[in-house]
Image 1 (tube, one colour):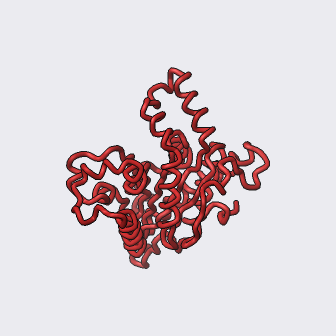
Image 2: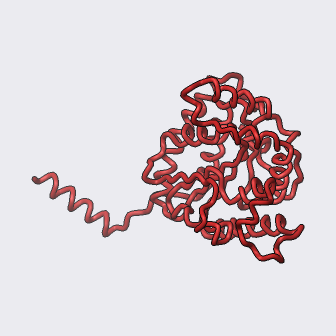
Length: 287
């Protein structure tokens, strides 16, 4: 798979309208993509074991998207083969009062994965330059200093996020960020499906429609986010999301490729430890 078509190069200004939500790379069929995806799931499970044993890196996966883009499904399918003991998923909703009494990245900082583990953020601190930008009235509940409430607020937050992610990267956290790019037409179809199918009614709220009315505002906020926070140490990937089978295959391929690029290996056993292993084997076999 050609990742260059999906990654946003640092410093490059992109327009979301130039990216096709229905793009499927060079896959000739849905079944071909699913076969690739299943192999990557197996490979990811093996790489997770090395990640845990190597204990030098952690992996942070960040997913951002408009409603109904398929974040939950991607997380479910891509991570289906990993050991749940080494994987943590956090979904960030509206902040609590305790969270509002801290800086905007406090609640996500608490949820960062420890070395050897995979952490998944279903939404993240990037909500602070997305939904808060589209709904600036939310700032009233954050009690930030008055002098910060100016035209530089968003640029300052971009800078803070970039510096924070650089810090994490330097300390062994590998960051992969995915924007699932669903079309407005496909979102409408998925919303209607949630309304028409009783077993999916719980996934829909009237607020989803009112937020959809701000589509252009959100696209502007997403473009600003992508253009200001795709860095060498924490790049954004813009993943076509109209075809769920491709979305899942693309995300899995990127994760596997990144883990394979790391210099990870199982710890070497000392001679003393090897001697202990032989002694333990002899004792067990003599029982």
